[in-house]
Structures are given as C-alpha cells and as structure tokens.
Length: 150
Image (cartoon, rainbow, N blue to C red; front, side, top):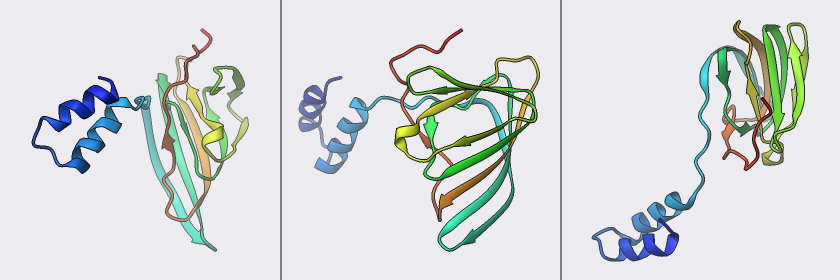
C-alpha cells in the first residue's frame, strides 16, 4: 500500500490522526531481517562513566544468521567454536573468522552487517559490547538490495 493510499484509507476510518499516521509510516517502511538459530546469554555487565560493558556468549546454529543489524557502540568478539561469515551492507565479505579469530565491529548505522553460520557445526562467540549506557545490544536494519555470495 502506498503512503497516499494509506492516508486515504485512514481518513475514511475511525482512527485517530496519530494512529493513522503511525500505521501509514509502518506500511511504507522496509522490514528488518530477523535472526534465526541464534541463542545468547549475558555473562556479565557493568556500567562505568556512562558506558555499558556487557559480556555475552552467542551461539548460532548451523545455517543460522544474526539478521542485518548495527550496534550503538563498539563490539569486540572472540570466536571460540565454528566459523563466522561476516558481510557488510554492500553484501561483500569482510571476513571469515574461525575459532581463535577476533573481530571488531564499529558503531553506528553506517556499519550495518550480518553474520552467518554456513558450516555444519555451531558457531560460538564471546562478545564484549561497549555501548552508551542503556542502549540496546543491536539495532535491526532492513536488508540491503544486494545478494549475499553463495
């Protein structure tokens, strides 16, 4: 539905103007890509000088993905099992990381990325997030218009 059609439909219903406006914006927004096969556990957290330091273990099942996202702060990861395939928002590979490898993900919406486990064994990461206090661990992002390499 186009924004124009959405606004016209809202005008003919009993929706309040705020609700109608919200529905129209939602209808025109690209959907975020969901993660699949991902489990995680926070192992420790402390806030110092306005920054959250969070240690988290993330496991991605074979064939699983993080979905497209970015972080409000910097992320530091150690791959402790499996292989991580990491892609930038132009769908180019910016790294294949095996057990023992490390990764730094910079902050901000200019650094949208996705992580996949295309191997047959679970991928396990130990991750330290350094975020502005109270920020979410990640922000969902719409899938780019490119295709990931096979």
